[in-house]
Amino acid sequence: MSDSTEAAGIAILLWAAEPEAPHRLITPFFHAAAAAAMDTPVEIYFTARSVLLLVPGVADGLRASARHDKTVGQALREAVAQGAQLFACTDALNAQGVDPDRLIPECTGRGGAVQFMARASDLRWRTLVY
Image (cartoon, rainbow, N blue to C red; front, side):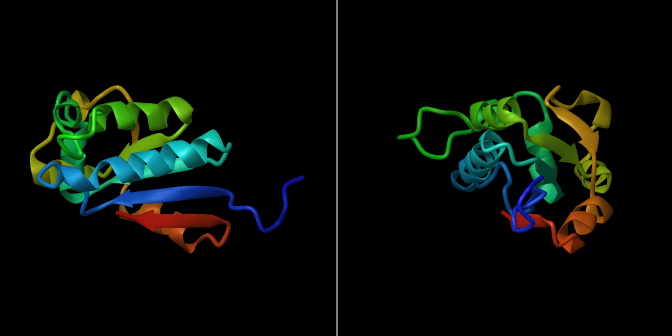
């Protein structure tokens, strides 16, 4: 039985984390990997321009800085390897002109405002917005 003060999971919303601002992209995936490594369920919701990170090749071409060896794609895959789940907002995909059938294989589902708000309103879940 788990402690009643433990979070049931962490839902991360990527809103201002977009390819044009690569300096903001590594931290959400590091936090997701850390939480997942602690056996906490992690869901990452890609919305707005962050859905572009789910297009093959985009995240792999980005670095937080010239001093950081790891690409955003590598950090994303590390989070998934630890157990984080990636969800793409269908409306954001449509708005950005991204074909939902051509996303990276690590993106396992669709989830937008309703799914994220369900997590945000569940007191057992914690939410982070980047």
